[in-house]
Length: 276
Ligand SMILES: Cc1ncc(COP(=O)(O)O)c(C=O)c1O
Image (cartoon, rainbow, N blue to C red; front, side):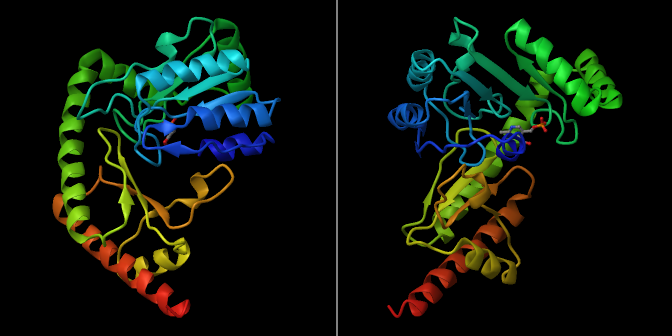
């Protein structure tokens, strides 16, 4: 995960609060004021991993303005932007970058096949030259076989047709998961309503211990990705990520039913522990 990569380079990470429209711009500005040595803003503006949230265009414009004001770079990580199955496309931040301030990145792993981990960067030439040098010292160069497979696919097939196919599958599975969540999750549990990408983000209220919830889930033969590792600093407990891209409709419904039961059990046992 990117946060771990940044940490290995000794970065000091500062989390910025989000709402249903992604990073909050006033919170971003406060973080920049409090941390004047900030080097860059890292954002996944479309169908964010892990929340599935998308930043509307006017917020993207404000982010560029703030980046200019505090003279920081924006690292726009966009692996999921092409997988929109509802609503209208929102242009990348890079598309409104008029002073080479945005480094845009994406990958074939989410639009072609998960094992094909070849990506691309759109950035100032000077920076791309540096990245090339640094990548050579990190891994010599990207795997040849994977590059050949992608080149052959791109030469012989239409990637847009393929993306249309996976979008149809994900739209269907997201709908199944959403209906199941509405049916089986206890009242008061908050969850995102993505219009694309692969993820739904769940927030269980009341200071739930995520590890206890996870253990109860495992006993019920279901699992989720705990929210903790996704936070740069301050963690919100009781949060987790669900993924609907890779399961049959039946398994999605069964999994959500088990998850709903596990959430209920964990909330009940916590109430007992607290003597409620
Ligand atoms: C936000 C984000 N960026 C980057 C990646 C990595 O993509 P890849 O390994 O294909 O470059 C992922 C997921 O794997 C991701 O969720």
